[in-house]
Image 1 (cartoon, rainbow, N blue to C red):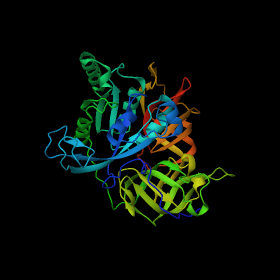
Image 2: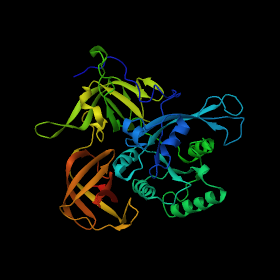
Image 3: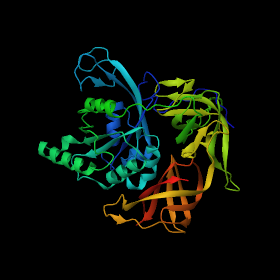
Image 4: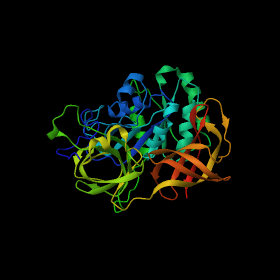
Length: 424
C-alpha cells in the first residue's frame, strides 16, 4: 500500500484563488445540455469546472465538476453592484465585507449522463436552474432535471435566464413568460428568474445577490458521526513520479454531518469488489490530508466540497472507482444492501425525451437503474406490487431506511427517469 508522504493538493487549487474559509454550502447547476451551466460557474468563480480531457474535446460536462467561490458585499456601492467575489469592490475600490464561501457542483445536462447529474444533486443544498433565452421552453433535459430536483426534495432554487445577449427585448420578455409558465405548480414556482449573459459576465452581481437571498447555508450537526458521500475518486500522482513523492488515493465529496481530522481512522463502504468472488468489502484507512477551497487544513466540517487524501494504494481510487461509496467512522455506517425494498412514487410520464411516454407499472424481472446518494446501480425486480418493489442489486449500496431513490427505466435505448421511491 502506498503511504502518504506529503500533502495532497485540493482539486482546482493550482488554478483557483484560495478563499478565506472552508465552504459551508453546496450550490448545484441543472438544465439542458449547452445551456451554459459551466459558463455560469466560470463567470462566478473564474474556474472552468469541466476540466476532464473528453469534456474539453466535446464541449460538454461529463463528470460532475466543482469550483469554490467567496462572496463579498461592499457597504458603499448600492446593490446589486455591491455583490462580487472580490475583497476589493470592483466599482468603488473600497474593501468589501466577506459574506460566506460556497462550493459549486456543476452537473452534466446531456440525457445520457443523467446518472452523473443525480449523483451531483445528492450533494446540493440549493440549485441554479439554467434556461437559455434563445431556445424553446422547456427543453427535454430542463424538464427532466426539474422533476429530478423536485423528486429529491430540492426547495432552494434560483433560475438563470442565460444567453440574454442572444435575443432582443421582446424575445427576452416572451422567453421570461414561458419560463414562469413552465415553473408554475413546480418546486421552482416562486424562484427568482435572473437574466444573465455568462459569456459577457452581465448581471453576475445580481445573480450573487439572489443566491445570498434564496439559498442560505444549511445548519449542520457537528456532533453527529461523520458521513461523507464520495462524488469523485482519483490518483493525483503524475506518471513517472519518483516513488518517494507518491501519495495515496484521494476522495472528493462532501460531509453531510460531523467532522473529520487528519489522522482519523475511516471506513469506506461498500468499498471495492474482490477479484475472485466479486463480493464488495469495506476498506479501512486513515485520513492523510484534507483540502478545501481555502487550502490544506487539519479538520473539515459539513458543507462544501473537500479532497480527502488517504493512505490507500492509488489503484483503489483511480478512475472514480469509489464513486457512490460513503465514508465514516468504522462501524458507524449504514448497512450494505444487496437486496432492497422501495416504496414507489412513479411519474405519469417518463421524462428526458421530446416525446412524453406513459409510465407503466413496475413489473417483476425487469431491470431498473437506481440512484441512491451518489451511488448508481442496476436492480432486477424480484417482486412488484402497485406501490412497492423489491430488487436484487447488481452492485450493493449503502442506504438507510427512508433514503430517497431515483428510478429510471430503459426506454428506446435510453435510461429515462420514471419516478422515485423511499428505502424501507
